[in-house]
Length: 385
Image 1: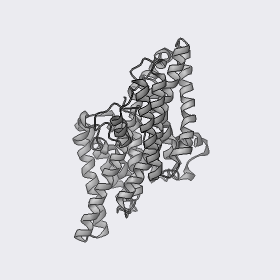
Image 2: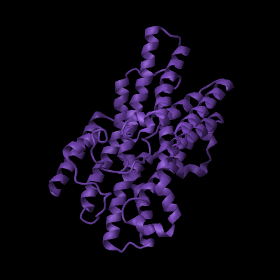
Image 3: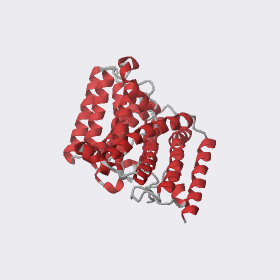
Image 4: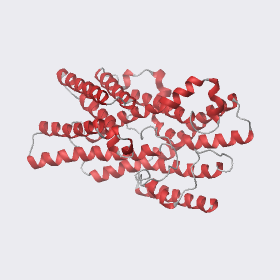
């Protein structure tokens, strides 16, 4: 499956501009997938070949926006003042896992059902094969790529990477806290140590790990973009103009050096996003009062962007199967099917957000949805055998 997707559910309700940016980025990623999979884009592409080609080639870069914003929000959640503010890290790790996997497991179950339904009608490589139990368990534990299993839906790699990135960031901050306590450091020294640990991870990712495609199943490959977002948050907390200026200069030099070493459009996108957020934050552009009411549709879309990302692919498979089975896919029929997919996906995302994603993460909820995925997958496997 293609590797392009948005980030997990954000905690940015008080920063509507970030929600709006996520809404726009999510549409680009959905457009990227809709331009590549199934018979519908093959028919519709002739109506706007440049648009479809651009989405197919570059729409995936929007994932870098989500990586930067995820890092920004993680820094605000874990260490807004440069010190870890979490008493029980393992509990926080489960909370993150739960928030990620509850809508993810629900969407995966839907995807398994849809794939089974459309398989007789839609002969396309985008349709996942019947799942096996080990594959289902690996997906539920966010280990599918590390263990080499076929993805049950497009973009599920991102959910696993998001979780890995969060744990890696928490570990880096936690190690600095442990050293601070052992060496009885002053708070200011501790903050610099923490920033140093994160900076080391960012540099290692940008200069080494991100240049090896085989490592793209690990957080180390993506931490450069994620860490840039973390630095942007901390730079924005600077009380002195000189400190903010130094932080932005360091950010600019870091990105420029990484691109001079090895030009990567994904890193360029993350770098530009990080610099833009740093400047907008400095100008108080992230406050609710700075965002005009005319952007409310994008803000609302951004708040359901994770659910939209999770659910749009099975909706695309379902619409593609129905349209291609009952009609000849002409350019206008293909375009109408894609537009219907977008509308139905947004409707499904609203339901997924309301009934699953917005609910508190609990062990009972996670285990119930995990069991539902396993049972559904087992039934589909038996029927498909």
